Image (cartoon, rainbow, N blue to C red; front, side, top):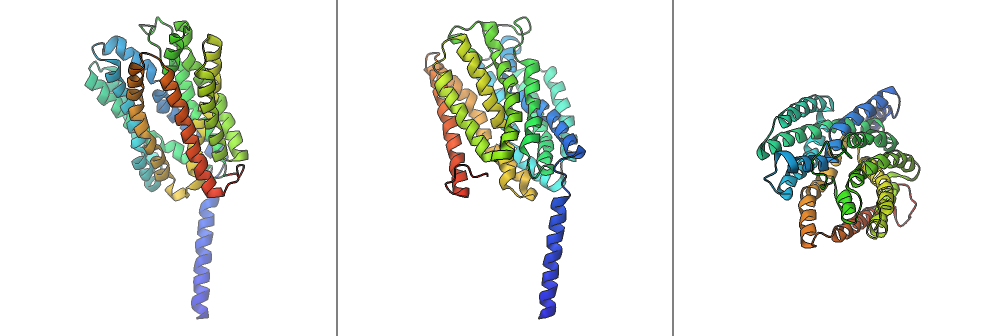
Length: 360
């Protein structure tokens, strides 16, 4: 009896030591971890950078390659990109949990280059749909670098995640706000924000730069969110910036009637948007065992893939039924932000009790 008990205690102690050893070998900083941050920055530049700059491609296709198609039909190419990028992440996450990031990154790099080469010689609708969809598969595999980043920073992942996510901002800065001579038909702008600004009288060239303003100011939010998340917790930070974005949409964007107010909204919203995007993966890492980090992160983003798929067509239909007014879309965006923040606040309250400032 004593021998069996001692044997069980010894086995438990050994298991505990193995588990502790496994946790301790993760650097949580240092050269290796920061090199992964640099790699994740590059993969974010190649993946989410494209998604966040879809307006440039939408406009180019409308005025050059796909003139015979309606804008709503062309938007499906770009909506499918975002959808498949997110929908594939549970599979990518499971492969990451089992095999690690190396093979994912090797395969993703090859597919990314091949997909872009095919897109560069595409002239038909179906060719662009297939080639850019092919690139989407590569973008999904490149997220292995982000998952590796979360694994190497078990204590405070928000700050390195903020630096890595800035890759999307730099991509947007290289494509957004192009002069009229580079993209034809300047009456078309690159986002709902810039199109709505033109509808209230903003000069078209200035309106084209609003997306660049959002991307530029989002750098402040991405880095600052990491600092706040390490002090107050990622959940508190995410909830706060999402509520702030809702307030900005409903109280500043909707009543904006001049250039100054629209530019102020773009600057402030960019900060909130950057913080929101940077902290998202840290929410999952906060409540997920390291062994299941890949699949859980993938499932988190897969749920949002459906909103990416239908958001463009819904926005187009809303604009058509409202007679060209952007008011309904602004109201819908504001209340959806409010709803999302409230759901996450409810989840936090359920886990921590009704303690508003509990770090979680």
